[in-house]
Image (cartoon, protein in one colour):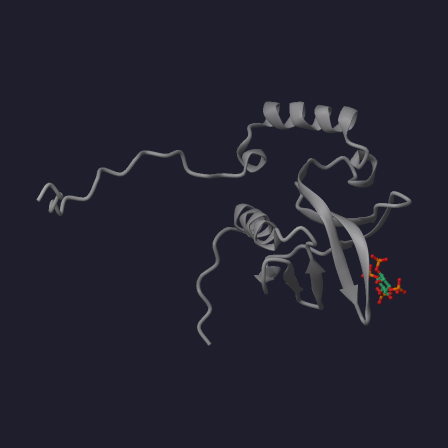
Length: 150
Ligand code: 4IP
C-alpha cells in the first residue's frame, strides 16, 4: 500500500550535548568573555568582577509587594539582584549546595535556600530557562547529589 511498515527505528542523529557555553569554557575563553563584559555590560560594576552567565529582569516578591530587579547568575557562583532604575546592587541570593529551584509555571519560579524561599517571576515567561541555568550551575559547582528519599 506504499506505506512503510518498517519497525526499524531511525538512527539517532548525533547532536552535541546542549550545554550552556560559559560553564564549560576554558580559562582563556573565560578571560576573553570577562574582558568583553567589562567593555560592554553596564552591569559589570555590580557583579564584583564575576562573569555573568545569565541575566534578566524578574519581579521579586517579598510580602505583598514585588520589586522589579535585574537578576544575574554569575560564576562564583552568585545570584545578584540589582535595581535596574538606579543601577544599584540590592542583594544576593546565597548559594549553597542546598539551593534548589522550583518552577511553578512559565513565569513563576522559586529559589529555595535554607533560610528563605525567593519568589521570582519572569514577566517574559522564561522561568524554566532560569531554573535550568541555576540547576546547571548547582550541579557544575557542587556535583549531582544523591536522590533524597522521603
Ligand atoms: C522590600 O520591600 C523589598 O522587597 C526588598 O527587596 C526586600 O529585601 C525587603 O525585605 C522588602 O521589605 P519594600 O521595598 O516594599 O519595602 P530589594 O532588596 O530587592 O529592594 P531583600 O533584598 O531581602 O529581598 P527585607 O526583609 O530583606 O528587608
